[in-house]
Picture 1 (cartoon, helix red, strand yellow):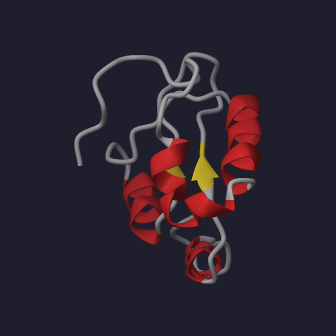
Picture 2 (picture 1 turned 60 degrees about the vertical axis):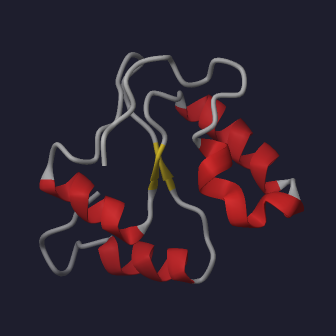
Length: 99
């Protein structure tokens, strides 16, 4: 996600969408990848906007899980918590990223 050059920077739009109540999640592009938003400046900037980093969850699993979580209206205030909750092995067990 472009975060530097002003005309390509997505951060203002992402920040605006999240402030309007939209849920935005980030997943790894690689099969065995794990997201750590603290490694690169772009990740740290995205983290500040409120993007949910889904560790090593596969994109397909993230899409299905997001639909499932959003389908439970009573979880409206717990979307981040529910997306990061390992329900059926969609997030592999390892050390959690330290804040």
